[in-house]
Length: 104
Image (cartoon, rainbow, N blue to C red; front, side, top):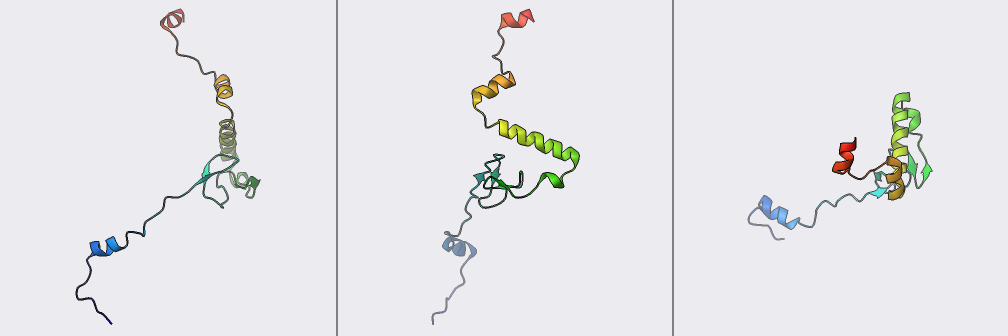
């Protein structure tokens, strides 16, 4: 059996392990709240898995936290609407010209 004459340096060992690298995390989107979530895992934000509510996330929160969470979920659900509808509802206006500014 062969025995190496010299020990390998850290850089030499590292070069041979070039194929062992970390892959970036692949995230999917929750169909209900549109937040990034790991695949095959229950969403921590809304408690849904494949569109079905598995965990009751709201039950664990206080009243104040529950209201904030409901507003956030409603806001993200509204974010999935078409762009034109959102602009009409938000009252997005064009920048005012100099004449319109002087009238105000």
